Image (tube, rainbow, N blue to C red; front, side):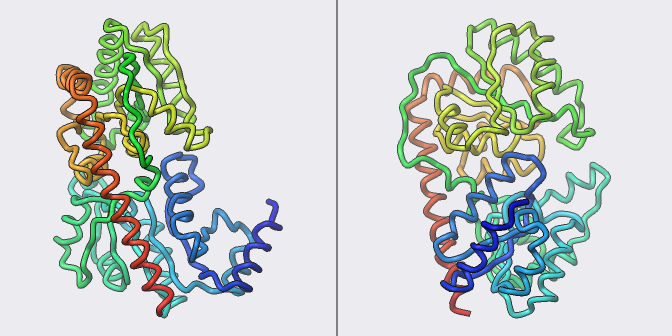
Amino acid sequence: MNTQPILEDLEYIRQYGKVSTRYVGLVGRGNLGDEILAKVIYSHFNHRLRLYSPMQMGPLMPYAEKLLGYKAYFLGGGTLIKQVSEHLKRIRKLQAKYPNSKFIVFGTGVGDIAMWERFGIKTNIQPWKEILNRSDFLGVRGPISKQYLDSWDLDKPVKVIGDGAILLARNYITPKKINRSIGLNLGSLLIRDGKFHGGDEKAVYNFYIKLLHYLKSENFKVTFFPMKAVEVEKITLIAREADLSEFQIYPAFKKPIEDTIANLEAQDIFIGERLHSSIFATCAYTPTIMLEYRTKCLDFMASIHCEDWNIRTDKLELDTVVGHIKYFHNNMEKHQRLLFSEMQDKVKTLHTARTEVINIITNA
């Protein structure tokens, strides 16, 4: 690990007074959505704050803490408020070590307790209530996350600020040329051990085969957008079984995010299972059908008032998807304007939240 740039950054902070803050989130796991989300949040605050994570700092983390301490710590992007997780434990340790530092929850998702119990995983909300009641700003991804926290009777107000990745939304619309191109992210439902709505891997697999048969019969140009390297093998197997001989794989997991959004923008329509694959598509104002494998997907779609184009994986019907595809092709300009309005509204909300958070931290 080359530590020189980090040492220079620490010295810069010490000399010029940027505020050192700790980021707690899903980083270093090889999931494009989580990695990009962390980078976007870092960038969003970079003019006033420096956010660090153990994955970023490596062995220098203890020295950074000793040199600078933390004036604040963030619970960042991802569906992190669920179960007794590593994130809960980290926040508890930070609260104990830095009792006077500010605790910020920024665009975090809240897990669906009932869903996880169906998966055999119980959630004790009391430890989460204790740490969230000590938060100085509590902003969540979407209205479902807010609904869950409101039901916990917290002492703190809960705000819906949106998923941080929405900050990648373009500030203009590129009109679609309607060239019968469609982007797909099939995620990795087939390796999720049944932990998705319905839990029926065979049914989901059969749906994908039917979908690919339909797209081939209608002469769509198909591009797959895997978000993790492990998805590529699954894509190849499914495409082969569906006898889909002509298709492209755009390896989003190893491409710059701006290039990925540009390629998503080139699609007429996007159908996505992984949450952030669909968020990135909406950032390009490409009409998107969300395949809701867990409730967090609906949480995002509800945050931009696009629930009508959200389909649970235990209710997958080809006719429904085909209907959405036809609707988008017949109402492309209208739907792009809808996406633009909703996404830009959330961008403004995130900017307002940033200002509030910076004031909370710097005026302490």
